[in-house]
Length: 277
Ligand SMILES: C[S@@+](CC[C@H](N)C(=O)[O-])C[C@H]1O[C@@H](n2cnc3c(N)ncnc32)[C@H](O)[C@@H]1O
Image 1 (cartoon, rainbow, N blue to C red):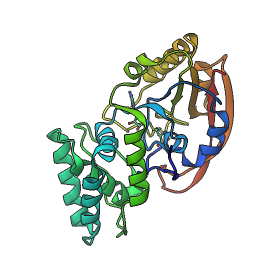
Image 2: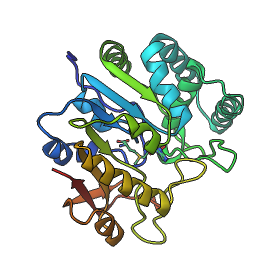
Image 3: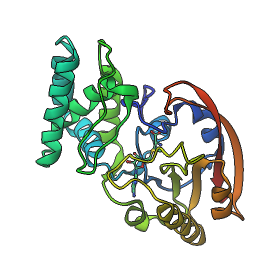
């Protein structure tokens, strides 16, 4: 049983913190196991703290971070605190970014790689995670000298939750990950969104992005999992293509504030929650 509230330790594009209430209201009262194939910052997962869960993301650095927080919280916290103790300027930011990219190139997924990711998330422009064609992190400096990059208590609470509960952490494509879903399990899908318009096409979470074909693959998986008796909840933009892909299911519209966009300014948008129950 988790005593303290947990919240995301990263700022993540599409983070669901502001939508927790409407999402919580749509979560089934009972289910067997919790599955989240596009975990990102994990806002919904951390707020629910399910006792048996399977989480997944295709981003290897992100999954390393969850694993390191579970297994090596002290090492991660120590390295982040050491970085935070140094004055940050442009030169220091780009040095750490280079160290992080060396970790990526050499497949060194360790506590240091996890700590660099947390620190860069706090010091990069808009908390974005964007990579180039080689898979290297290429977000510029945010030009701010910040204080602490982590909430140590929150991180330790998450660590002990991940250790004590039955949480499996995977790094797979969403379709392969969902092969283990059974009747009575609950799946929350928060994939990269279908663009609202041609200019709002923020889908560069990974080297390959998330294409329309991926959205069709996701809709086909949704239909299959519905057939086998899983309980399904999915978020996306309120665009005609989503209504087309999920016609026949319950589609609830939501008004939202947008934090990450081309201008970095707040604006509003329309999203939907799709359920099969
Ligand atoms: C909208 S974000 C999830 C946001 C998350 N719900 C939160 O609250 O922060 C989408 C995630 O999908 C991941 N992703 C992209 N393509 C994927 C794929 N084919 N399989 C699994 N995960 C993928 C991205 O790395 C990203 O973290």
